[in-house]
Length: 398
Ligand SMILES: Nc1ncnc2c1ncn2[C@@H]1O[C@H](COP(=O)(O)OP(=O)(O)O)[C@@H](O)[C@H]1O
Ligand SMILES: [Mg+2]
Image (tube, rainbow, N blue to C red; front, side):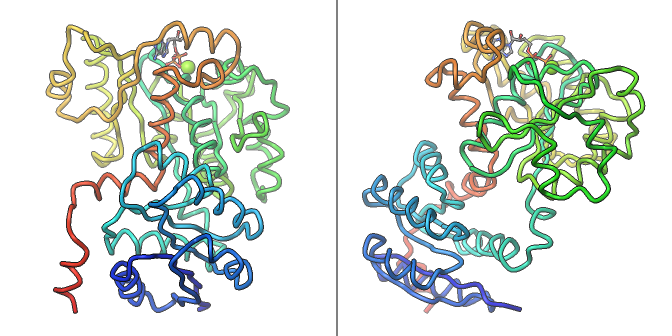
């Protein structure tokens, strides 16, 4: 197997030593350069073109983002892992916008570092498997209409595309009754029915020209078939094939569903990595949510496959979130604030919420949801609880 070349940028000698020690465990890794400072390394990095750069960005992050953008501009395939002492969701969003693919808080955790490198190895050295292993299918579901599924699917997909800069497919599986084209005010040339007919041998170029790219973003829309007759002909197995085919091109596939447990929906849910189960905070909605969780259990889904998203959340609601969690025996993963004014104005203008008012609580909530869902942050939540001094670890290790 080929080697994966890494360039290390770290001022703190102990952390540098720790990095090297951890990376030694991966026999395919070759450290081809090191430096104390990102700004002074630009020329060297652009000369030796490493596969991966691991760099500290704690000091002067804005300047560092600029340098990173300029490096990626000249060496577009480079994967960048940023490390930092302090961070916030905002830092991570900015880092990802600059093209940083992984973010690891300090003190570094060996497992997280090695996992990030391993992911890049799959992408760089094992091209054929790239998308199979990395793409994530997220289905927004509820067995009730009008709870906000389409709003979530549309805005989440766009934020994921903007933040991660990876390709995102937004798929409307509300066969012949879909709303996504209305929410985005677009008229795509093709739809699910066409893609399914051409699915054999569909490659990346075909996918990118069949799905409708939204306004020069990385979000590509796949609309539902407009006619009932056409929609009726689609078989569950074809949906499965379609999802698998989409996985080869898109890093994230966001699916908007209808509200019934029909064959198409169950096939979709079966082939989904993460279900966002949407609920409002009222008794009938919570009961329905319970029924869905029971159904998922009977379908054999693991508990972690489903996350609960509360929509139209109001702080002064009579029903408390703790009570909902108790009733569902499950944690609430996300709350999207009630903001009728912003969302209706977005829907009626056919624009994403971030375009209507990027600073609104609801735009912020979709954006942070996207940040949380991207792989990078998943790992982070586990990291936060660990607090230790790297020096102390080194002393014990050596
Ligand atoms: N966070 C929110 N705050 C206020 N109103 C919302 C919110 N999300 C959705 N809505 C309202 O609910 C309606 C239904 O939303 P939609 O996304 O179409 O739901 P679904 O796809 O589940 O049927 C929208 O027209 C909008 O007015
Ligand atoms: Mg809908």
